[in-house]
Length: 244
Ligand code: ADP
Ligand code: MG
Image (tube, rainbow, N blue to C red; front, side, top):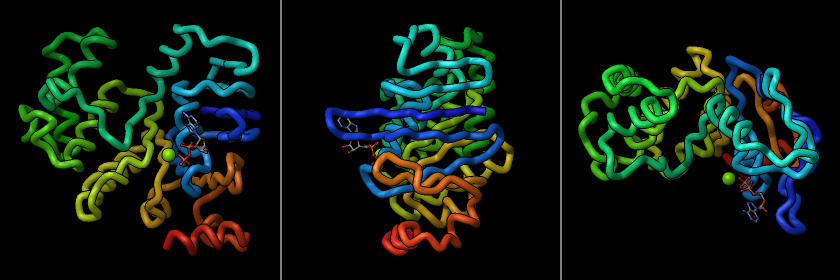
């Protein structure tokens, strides 16, 4: 279980996160939605310690961080990054490495696996995301959807407890988006713990065990998916209407 308690983050005068308390359960898919600029990316990046909030508590199993008190040690940051892997909107593959080497790299450099072991695992994961036949291609030869599936395989190869995805399909054409969403639906079915920021509410409704609605850096809703989509709350209804 990953917990945030009373977490705040400001950029100058801007309250990106305003006293946020949330839980992200293990083996579940948590989806974060909300208007542009509401703090979704800042929230996700805080889970991975890419942002350091200035107040609040972060609790990951027995690892506790008090954002207000402590400068984060590089050891803590590494520990958290091993447990939470981020998949970005723009894929961020290494352009000079082939697809299979992209998926091997972290296994060899960070997990200390042999190249043979890493290659076997990489090919297995590429097969899982439907990209095995492109193992020897370079990222520049892939479509956006293919690149994103490789990026997901690369995250899986690190066996993180949570995979965090920030609008993983918003750079993709709708017909290409579907191939990535299918992979995520499959991971959700396998009980991989996921935290997904998305604008695709049809997908959110289908994949999410729970929905968090963020508005102006605050939690406007946090609860079961069905409850969110059938809410009587006028702010939620307005948001849903604006997005459809
Ligand atoms: P979302 O992902 O929901 O669109 P963000 O988390 O990116 O929202 O941003 C929340 C607020 O914090 C916005 O007002 C944004 O302009 C501001 N913000 C985010 N990152 C930075 C930054 N690095 N420097 C200054 N302001 C930022
Ligand atoms: Mg964002």
